[in-house]
Length: 330
Image 1 (cartoon, rainbow, N blue to C red):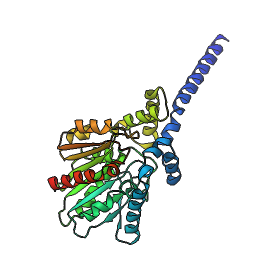
Image 2 (image 1 turned 90 degrees about the vertical axis):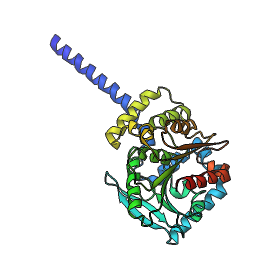
Image 3 (image 1 turned 180 degrees about the horizontal axis):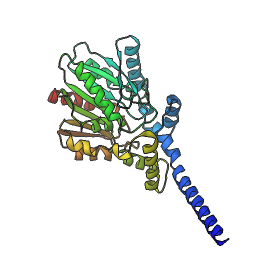
């Protein structure tokens, strides 16, 4: 009888332990699903995300709606008129990814435009696309995985997206019959993604990176969001659980989404921008990326600008910095 009681006690303890463990893990799943999982309902998820107060406050529509919509409309019209051409690649993990290529009349260079988290090329570059195109830039608007016409279920904060960038760049280089200089221009997560890509061997025609309001790492970005948007305590335990689900379901580690190692290897000039009033991706991220960068570099902090709003707040100087960057590196 005593032996049976001991076995029963052990079984109860195991069940209790497993129950506590499962509860501990499952408390991190909703956050993982909200942040990382995109699934097939992209539009609904995007609206839910941008319904958050911080996302609404930081979005260029807040204060610059007319100029933002005008830029988007110009991009959309260029696509619908047939001037833009669809392009596709297959990612390393088998996803069909989409982009639109817009040639200039007298091209001087090619720009790959890398949009941000749950964003779009037409939206994130609404203020800059027409200016760049009219100043001799062929433009490749990529749809990041899970966005636009690109496939995917999980947003990996650059961990897998930066390898997609490498494939897009190789395609650009293969089709670059006029041997034009190539630049990578990213906003928000798109900026962090091209920074991660810069640590790999890139074609010789890649002359520079333009990085606006990019973060340093997925871990730090989620740490900031959890603490300041949702007022969540015990953040490190939450991140531990999110990292586990990233490994189990999305096939990447949070530590893979980090710019540090790439910036230590990068030898391509980088132009950094960030708004001082950005509460979506804090300005300290670009300051840290700038400090870690071992190549030629420049940093412009735009006073009073929120997330992705620097081209609107200081339009003339912002565009001037980019123009000078081209002159220096073409």
